[in-house]
Length: 339
Image (tube, rainbow, N blue to C red; front, side):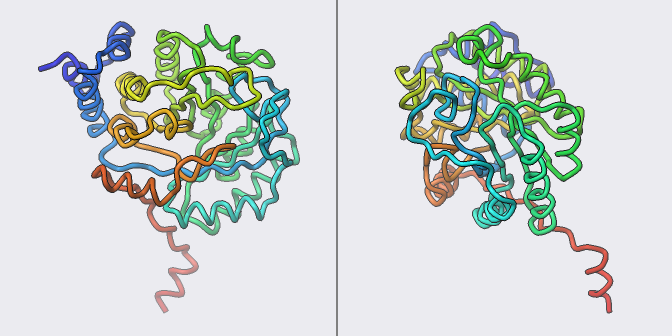
């Protein structure tokens, strides 16, 4: 039995791998890559089954952010031709949820490019969530920047199931990425979401110039925070941003990162996210062995792979597309059905 399978057995038995073992995964050879993925898949299968959870993003407010995150084409000082518009209307957000439901998404995520939501933006999002919950059997995620406890409770009361706020990288490397807010600001937002009763979706971006240890530190930070979902993005350099010059990762390094995140966070929903198409290229389907979730129909400012192609990829790889249960029939409808 290989050391990779020994790692899988340890994790499946309820144990944990340590940082030195995580580094072994990231430093594994190309000859070992399939063995590493096989072991990561055993962990995925044990904790998450064979299903792939499909998510769709809605860029609810674009290109208006005053933060200076170096990777982001919506940040202050980035002139890369992205659409710029203020907060979408309630009806636009609800219509986006309808389209996501038609495309078999289990989760619809409304995202705003901002430091944090204004009162009016909170009102718009909460009203949209209430209408969506009345109409559609789809889970709602929001990503609205930094939150305080009152805002988190308001979102949870409206029906938001999960809040996304990525740490992006390690605590050590974060100041190289952003200076207009701190790593602790992000950690505190994740904790506020969980205190309010929402699940936490929190991940990062691989390939921003960080060291391998930074990827490991992020994975262990997320384990300590006990986040329910981890989106792993791969840097797709955007014109006009401070990181426009970085080189994309090799497909094999992307897959090693996903495997490492699965070993460290075995129970989490692990999502292969932004940049997968241009970094993984013809090896995209291999990402589904450690990851049990993916975005489809593009990201916030880049188109990504088409929904039909993603569904075909999932089917061709032999995985199942997760589906939400139908919306429960209300007591009022039950009473009429019995007449």
